[in-house]
Image 1 (cartoon, rainbow, N blue to C red):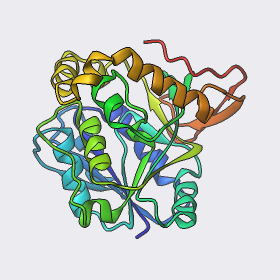
Image 2: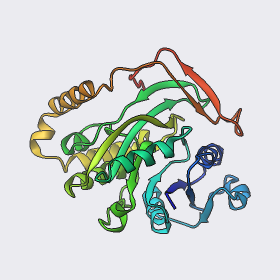
Image 3: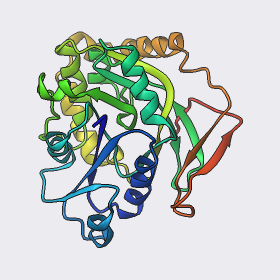
Image 4: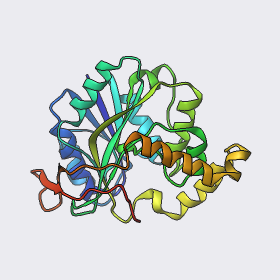
Length: 277
Protein backbone atom coordinates (compact mmCIF):
# COMPACT_ATOMS: atom_id res chain seq x y z
CA UNK A 1 0.00 0.00 0.00
CA UNK A 2 1.54 3.32 -1.07
CA UNK A 3 -0.54 5.80 0.98
CA UNK A 4 -2.67 5.76 4.09
CA UNK A 5 -4.81 8.84 4.67
CA UNK A 6 -6.43 9.21 8.09
CA UNK A 7 -9.41 11.50 8.66
CA UNK A 8 -10.53 12.22 12.23
CA UNK A 9 -14.27 12.82 12.25
CA UNK A 10 -16.88 14.09 14.69
CA UNK A 11 -20.14 15.67 13.59
CA UNK A 12 -18.86 16.95 10.27
CA UNK A 13 -20.87 14.81 7.85
CA UNK A 14 -21.46 17.60 5.31
CA UNK A 15 -17.71 18.25 4.91
CA UNK A 16 -16.62 14.64 5.31
CA UNK A 17 -18.50 13.62 2.15
CA UNK A 18 -16.43 16.08 0.10
CA UNK A 19 -13.19 15.06 1.80
CA UNK A 20 -13.83 11.38 1.03
CA UNK A 21 -14.54 12.15 -2.62
CA UNK A 22 -11.28 14.10 -2.94
CA UNK A 23 -9.25 11.16 -1.66
CA UNK A 24 -11.16 8.52 -3.60
CA UNK A 25 -10.32 9.96 -7.03
CA UNK A 26 -6.55 10.05 -6.42
CA UNK A 27 -5.06 7.84 -9.13
CA UNK A 28 -2.56 6.00 -6.96
CA UNK A 29 -2.79 3.07 -4.56
CA UNK A 30 -4.12 4.24 -1.20
CA UNK A 31 -6.39 3.50 1.71
CA UNK A 32 -8.53 6.06 3.51
CA UNK A 33 -9.23 5.41 7.18
CA UNK A 34 -11.99 7.53 8.72
CA UNK A 35 -11.84 7.53 12.52
CA UNK A 36 -15.28 8.70 13.58
CA UNK A 37 -15.99 9.38 17.25
CA UNK A 38 -19.57 8.07 17.17
CA UNK A 39 -21.04 11.10 15.39
CA UNK A 40 -24.79 11.65 15.80
CA UNK A 41 -25.24 14.08 12.90
CA UNK A 42 -26.10 11.52 10.22
CA UNK A 43 -22.52 10.41 9.53
CA UNK A 44 -23.30 6.85 10.62
CA UNK A 45 -26.19 6.69 8.15
CA UNK A 46 -23.77 6.53 5.20
CA UNK A 47 -20.15 6.19 6.32
CA UNK A 48 -20.11 2.47 7.24
CA UNK A 49 -21.57 1.61 3.82
CA UNK A 50 -19.10 3.74 1.84
CA UNK A 51 -16.71 1.27 0.20
CA UNK A 52 -14.18 3.99 -0.59
CA UNK A 53 -13.13 4.15 3.06
CA UNK A 54 -12.31 1.99 6.04
CA UNK A 55 -14.74 3.37 8.60
CA UNK A 56 -13.80 2.94 12.24
CA UNK A 57 -16.50 4.17 14.60
CA UNK A 58 -15.32 4.34 18.20
CA UNK A 59 -14.93 6.81 21.04
CA UNK A 60 -11.61 8.62 21.27
CA UNK A 61 -9.93 11.26 23.41
CA UNK A 62 -10.00 13.93 20.73
CA UNK A 63 -8.70 14.63 17.24
CA UNK A 64 -5.07 13.73 17.84
CA UNK A 65 -5.95 10.47 19.57
CA UNK A 66 -8.12 9.63 16.54
CA UNK A 67 -5.22 10.34 14.17
CA UNK A 68 -2.89 8.15 16.23
CA UNK A 69 -5.43 5.32 16.16
CA UNK A 70 -5.62 5.61 12.38
CA UNK A 71 -1.83 5.64 12.01
CA UNK A 72 -1.58 2.47 14.09
CA UNK A 73 -3.98 0.78 11.68
CA UNK A 74 -2.20 2.12 8.59
CA UNK A 75 -0.66 -0.15 5.96
CA UNK A 76 0.77 2.59 3.76
CA UNK A 77 4.42 3.43 3.14
CA UNK A 78 3.46 7.12 3.20
CA UNK A 79 1.05 8.63 5.71
CA UNK A 80 -1.00 11.79 6.05
CA UNK A 81 -4.05 13.06 7.84
CA UNK A 82 -6.79 15.12 6.25
CA UNK A 83 -9.48 16.81 8.30
CA UNK A 84 -13.13 16.67 7.27
CA UNK A 85 -13.09 20.28 6.02
CA UNK A 86 -10.03 19.70 3.82
CA UNK A 87 -9.56 18.13 0.38
CA UNK A 88 -6.80 16.87 -1.86
CA UNK A 89 -6.48 18.47 -5.26
CA UNK A 90 -6.33 16.32 -8.43
CA UNK A 91 -3.10 14.33 -8.70
CA UNK A 92 -1.90 15.41 -5.25
CA UNK A 93 -0.84 12.01 -3.95
CA UNK A 94 1.02 11.08 -7.12
CA UNK A 95 2.92 14.37 -6.98
CA UNK A 96 3.88 13.70 -3.37
CA UNK A 97 4.85 10.10 -4.12
CA UNK A 98 7.17 11.19 -6.91
CA UNK A 99 8.78 13.79 -4.63
CA UNK A 100 9.52 11.16 -1.99
CA UNK A 101 10.98 8.89 -4.69
CA UNK A 102 13.33 11.66 -5.80
CA UNK A 103 14.33 12.45 -2.21
CA UNK A 104 14.76 9.18 -0.28
CA UNK A 105 16.46 11.03 2.59
CA UNK A 106 13.40 13.20 3.30
CA UNK A 107 11.02 11.94 5.99
CA UNK A 108 8.39 14.69 6.14
CA UNK A 109 7.16 16.88 3.28
CA UNK A 110 5.18 20.10 3.52
CA UNK A 111 3.35 21.20 0.35
CA UNK A 112 1.18 24.20 -0.50
CA UNK A 113 -2.53 24.79 0.10
CA UNK A 114 -5.33 26.80 -1.40
CA UNK A 115 -7.60 28.33 1.24
CA UNK A 116 -11.25 28.39 0.20
CA UNK A 117 -14.62 29.41 1.63
CA UNK A 118 -17.53 26.97 2.24
CA UNK A 119 -18.71 27.34 -1.36
CA UNK A 120 -15.26 26.58 -2.75
CA UNK A 121 -14.43 30.18 -3.64
CA UNK A 122 -10.83 31.30 -3.43
CA UNK A 123 -9.49 33.13 -0.36
CA UNK A 124 -5.71 32.88 -0.65
CA UNK A 125 -2.63 30.78 -1.31
CA UNK A 126 -0.83 29.31 1.69
CA UNK A 127 2.71 28.26 0.77
CA UNK A 128 4.66 26.13 3.22
CA UNK A 129 7.99 26.47 4.95
CA UNK A 130 9.77 23.92 7.10
CA UNK A 131 9.13 24.74 10.77
CA UNK A 132 11.66 26.32 13.10
CA UNK A 133 11.36 25.87 16.84
CA UNK A 134 11.22 29.46 18.08
CA UNK A 135 8.64 30.56 15.52
CA UNK A 136 6.50 27.46 16.06
CA UNK A 137 6.39 28.11 19.81
CA UNK A 138 5.62 31.83 19.86
CA UNK A 139 3.70 32.57 16.65
CA UNK A 140 -0.05 32.44 16.15
CA UNK A 141 0.46 30.65 12.83
CA UNK A 142 2.39 27.55 11.82
CA UNK A 143 4.69 27.60 8.81
CA UNK A 144 2.64 24.80 7.21
CA UNK A 145 -0.90 23.41 7.04
CA UNK A 146 -1.44 19.78 7.97
CA UNK A 147 -3.76 19.32 4.98
CA UNK A 148 -0.56 19.32 2.90
CA UNK A 149 1.74 17.44 5.29
CA UNK A 150 3.01 13.97 4.37
CA UNK A 151 5.39 11.60 6.15
CA UNK A 152 7.14 8.31 5.76
CA UNK A 153 5.89 5.42 7.82
CA UNK A 154 9.16 5.22 9.74
CA UNK A 155 8.44 8.57 11.41
CA UNK A 156 5.64 6.79 13.28
CA UNK A 157 6.85 3.19 13.30
CA UNK A 158 10.54 3.66 14.11
CA UNK A 159 10.77 7.13 15.60
CA UNK A 160 7.42 6.77 17.44
CA UNK A 161 6.56 10.41 16.73
CA UNK A 162 2.82 10.17 17.29
CA UNK A 163 0.71 13.20 18.17
CA UNK A 164 0.31 14.07 21.84
CA UNK A 165 -3.42 13.61 22.62
CA UNK A 166 -3.17 15.88 25.66
CA UNK A 167 -3.48 18.80 23.25
CA UNK A 168 -6.91 19.49 21.81
CA UNK A 169 -6.00 22.12 19.20
CA UNK A 170 -2.24 22.80 19.23
CA UNK A 171 -1.04 19.23 18.68
CA UNK A 172 0.32 20.05 15.21
CA UNK A 173 2.71 22.65 16.57
CA UNK A 174 3.82 20.45 19.47
CA UNK A 175 4.44 17.59 17.02
CA UNK A 176 6.50 19.91 14.81
CA UNK A 177 8.78 20.85 17.70
CA UNK A 178 9.46 17.15 18.34
CA UNK A 179 10.23 16.60 14.66
CA UNK A 180 12.85 19.34 14.92
CA UNK A 181 14.26 17.98 18.18
CA UNK A 182 14.53 14.47 16.71
CA UNK A 183 16.43 15.72 13.68
CA UNK A 184 13.79 14.55 11.21
CA UNK A 185 14.71 15.45 7.63
CA UNK A 186 12.03 17.79 6.31
CA UNK A 187 11.48 19.47 2.94
CA UNK A 188 9.06 21.72 1.06
CA UNK A 189 7.27 20.59 -2.08
CA UNK A 190 6.40 23.79 -3.92
CA UNK A 191 3.15 22.54 -5.42
CA UNK A 192 -0.51 22.89 -4.47
CA UNK A 193 -1.73 19.55 -3.15
CA UNK A 194 -4.61 20.47 -0.88
CA UNK A 195 -7.51 22.79 -0.12
CA UNK A 196 -8.33 24.06 3.35
CA UNK A 197 -11.91 25.22 3.89
CA UNK A 198 -12.40 28.16 6.21
CA UNK A 199 -15.81 27.18 7.56
CA UNK A 200 -15.94 29.71 10.39
CA UNK A 201 -15.91 26.83 12.87
CA UNK A 202 -12.32 25.61 12.44
CA UNK A 203 -10.86 24.36 15.72
CA UNK A 204 -7.81 26.61 15.59
CA UNK A 205 -10.06 29.69 15.79
CA UNK A 206 -11.80 28.67 19.04
CA UNK A 207 -11.22 29.82 22.65
CA UNK A 208 -9.48 26.59 23.66
CA UNK A 209 -6.92 27.10 20.90
CA UNK A 210 -6.16 30.57 22.27
CA UNK A 211 -5.64 29.17 25.76
CA UNK A 212 -3.46 26.34 24.51
CA UNK A 213 -1.41 28.81 22.45
CA UNK A 214 -0.52 30.73 25.61
CA UNK A 215 0.43 27.52 27.40
CA UNK A 216 2.42 26.29 24.42
CA UNK A 217 4.41 29.52 24.19
CA UNK A 218 5.71 29.00 27.72
CA UNK A 219 7.94 26.27 26.32
CA UNK A 220 9.80 28.79 24.16
CA UNK A 221 13.26 30.04 25.10
CA UNK A 222 13.16 33.25 27.14
CA UNK A 223 14.84 35.18 24.33
CA UNK A 224 12.13 34.11 21.87
CA UNK A 225 9.31 35.18 24.20
CA UNK A 226 10.99 38.55 24.64
CA UNK A 227 11.72 38.99 20.95
CA UNK A 228 8.50 37.84 19.28
CA UNK A 229 8.57 40.66 16.69
CA UNK A 230 12.08 39.63 15.63
CA UNK A 231 11.10 35.96 15.43
CA UNK A 232 8.11 36.86 13.25
CA UNK A 233 10.24 39.18 11.11
CA UNK A 234 12.73 36.37 10.54
CA UNK A 235 9.90 34.07 9.52
CA UNK A 236 8.59 36.65 7.06
CA UNK A 237 12.08 37.04 5.60
CA UNK A 238 12.25 33.28 5.10
CA UNK A 239 8.89 33.39 3.35
CA UNK A 240 10.07 36.22 1.12
CA UNK A 241 13.27 34.40 0.14
CA UNK A 242 11.34 31.18 -0.52
CA UNK A 243 9.01 32.92 -2.97
CA UNK A 244 5.93 32.41 -0.79
CA UNK A 245 4.86 36.02 -1.31
CA UNK A 246 5.00 35.74 -5.10
CA UNK A 247 1.71 34.31 -6.37
CA UNK A 248 0.96 33.36 -9.95
CA UNK A 249 -2.49 32.93 -11.55
CA UNK A 250 -3.64 29.33 -11.32
CA UNK A 251 -6.72 27.17 -11.04
CA UNK A 252 -7.88 24.44 -8.69
CA UNK A 253 -10.68 21.89 -8.67
CA UNK A 254 -12.60 20.82 -5.57
CA UNK A 255 -15.86 19.19 -4.58
CA UNK A 256 -18.57 21.49 -3.25
CA UNK A 257 -21.93 20.96 -1.61
CA UNK A 258 -23.53 22.06 -4.87
CA UNK A 259 -21.30 19.65 -6.81
CA UNK A 260 -20.55 16.70 -4.46
CA UNK A 261 -20.03 14.14 -7.24
CA UNK A 262 -17.87 16.12 -9.64
CA UNK A 263 -15.05 18.55 -9.05
CA UNK A 264 -15.72 22.17 -9.85
CA UNK A 265 -12.84 24.20 -11.30
CA UNK A 266 -12.09 27.70 -10.02
CA UNK A 267 -9.83 30.09 -11.93
CA UNK A 268 -7.65 32.39 -9.82
CA UNK A 269 -6.63 35.45 -11.84
CA UNK A 270 -5.58 37.59 -8.88
CA UNK A 271 -3.94 35.31 -6.33
CA UNK A 272 -2.84 36.60 -2.94
CA UNK A 273 -0.86 35.38 0.05
CA UNK A 274 -2.94 37.52 2.43
CA UNK A 275 -5.21 35.48 4.69
CA UNK A 276 -7.53 37.94 6.44
CA UNK A 277 -9.53 36.34 9.24
